[in-house]
Amino acid sequence: MITVSFEHAEHRAMCAQLDLAEQQLGSVSASELVRVLAEAASVDNVAELLDMLGNDGKILADDSICIAIGADYYIDLIAIGRHVQRDCNQRLIWTSVTRLKLMAISRTTP
Image 1 (cartoon, rainbow, N blue to C red):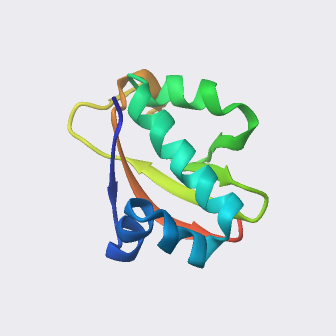
Image 2: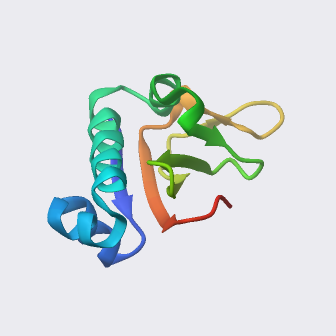
């Protein structure tokens, strides 16, 4: 199970209350946000989540993750935790990542 924490309290509130997310993002993006968080809770690590998301999830050059939620919004996440592993190029080994922090919800990709 992937644990998601939040950089900002308003993001936590939005993810906990569908009606608030719908007011902020619209019903389609709010539903996608809930779906992504549910999928994160259903897999063992971020590599599995990225496989499940297909083209909706992208690893960026700084090892952050950008996930499309609907056609208009994206969530930006970073890996957190002491037990994440890195390869010889210092890139994250995503099978070792089980904790993410949601940093932003935006209309543009980073």
